[in-house]
Image (cartoon, rainbow, N blue to C red; front, side, top):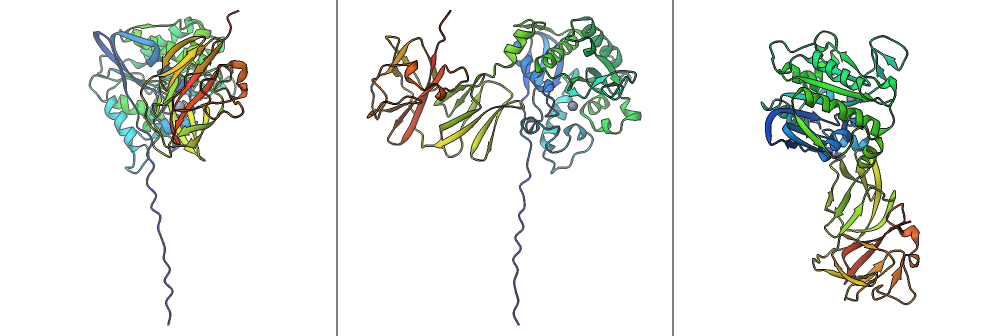
Length: 434
Ligand SMILES: [Zn+2]
């Protein structure tokens, strides 16, 4: 008799875990109250994470403290989904140990309960426009947009900021008396009366906070407002009103009512430095960046923007700022070698020293001085030339569809030796002043 042995191999999947988050502490020189701002609990609500990132970069706190977690649900933000591992904002009552959000939820709970924290804001973009009375499918009491959300009228027995309804009303009055982009963008206070009426919200972050005697509010801008700068301005103004209530003093380096200025700063995505040997400006980068000299693995991306992240998929790196994919980087794999010394370039007739992962501004022309590197100016070619150094090059000598940026001003020059990639310099042709 023969036995047929069937081997069953069980694949035990490694449990995915959401990415860890960073807490940014902005502390004033003068002691005062501490405001905790949590952004990005829902990945498809960009007003809720671009605003705290903006605050982190452009505000200075003089009195009191502002603690910021701009992107608590990082994996869902890249995916542009409410919750990649289901709704994180329904996991604050009970969470299983094998839940991918387990570590993140427990870490933020500890921060919420930190005895320094006096008030918590959870930032969202909600559906429609909240109105006390039903008007239509978009403007009604079940909508969440343009509202300050409270779970209950007050926290009994809590003297400091326990009067949730009063605070929310004060904040909203200030917002509505200020400049709105449209009259129908006006804000309202929505009390979900969570304890008695809203079982779902009993699982939420703010309810966890208030049941632990921490005043908490959700700020909701509207998903129906499509302009990101509008949402960010409303979120910032709300936060500023909360700071006023809390006697937190701040300075900012811009005018919050200047839409153009906020937009410009909002879409300044900063730079990424890769493997310490090349640099790309992400504000005007092309959607596709080909033949990026990278290692097989363990490539090190250092971003200036705190919402930046990468995702490796189908042999390319997707580069994100929040939920916005700014470029796909297609690697060309090279062994890399380090070189920290200066590189000499003749720029508009003058010899300058620069280094890899730097940008060089050029008015008319440049010449890479001869070394033992093999030099490759991307988009330039000259018959019979192996290394493109010791040649005077002007912008019109380079094919402009090889530019790094959409504005067709930035080009790559790469340095190789013995089959290894050493580094890249970005050549930036300054636009003529007219
Ligand atoms: Zn939300």
